[in-house]
Amino acid sequence: MNNFSPSPSLKPYIKGYMVIESMEGMNTTTLPDTSIVIAFRLRGKVSFIHNNTVNTITSSSVSGLRKGVRQFNYSADTATLLVKFKEGGASALFKDPMHELFSHTVSLDNLVRNSIVREIEERIAEADNYYQAVLILDGFLMTLVKNNEKDSLIHEAIKRIQLAKGNIRINELAGSLPISRDPLEKRFRKITGTSPKQFASIIRLRNVISNHKENTSLTTIAFDAGYYDQSHFIKDFRLFTGKAPQDFFTSGQWW
Image 1 (cartoon, rainbow, N blue to C red):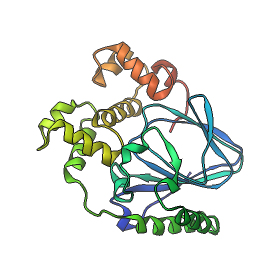
Image 2 (cartoon, rainbow, N blue to C red):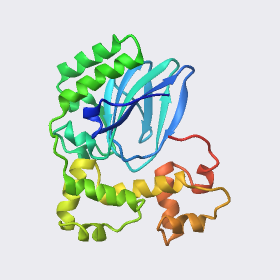
Image 3 (tube, rainbow, N blue to C red):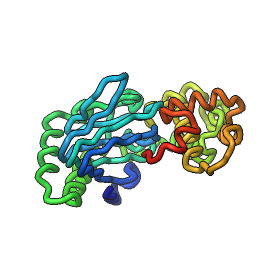
Image 4 (cartoon, one colour):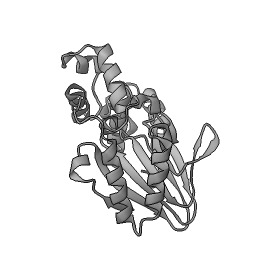
């Protein structure tokens, strides 16, 4: 995996660029995350399974946030260039409400005019190396920035959920901000791509996984994550990872 930084003007919106290569082909397990992602397929074929159907990813696509795990298959000699947005960052580039992408992966030309997408795909395909491809993509994304003003209230809500590691009640969150719950949820969904509750759940379960220690009891894991009902925790964890906790933590690599 090759990682690249965005230009300074895009750093408020983009975490980074990465190129995923597969010389021999591979299958990956990708967990839900709080970042919207754009993908440009440089070569090869990439597919994922959704509702027991194999879906081949188009030359350029956008993936919204989601509740559950997704399995990807990379054919031999595949390379994909990814744009990983900061939380709420994609809303500065696209006029569409981000929650419309929830659980979906769609062609980029659903959000950007087809002729523009085809042109940038061709320019990226002609790049001499990955660095040049990233520079071309970075310049293209700068032209999409439509809204330089952040919704400071929603970004404060994001920050508070992150600081609480997702273990926060949405009524309490709304009560701590100068906004009631319904308009908070509406603005939050539009900017981040999901509800505050689902956003918090993603952060909470990712935190559980990232900080897991061997030989920790399931009861302790659930309690530390803010669950008082172990069966509820297992149900959420299985949806999030595709496996029960004890199976997941011995299953190897995930992204």
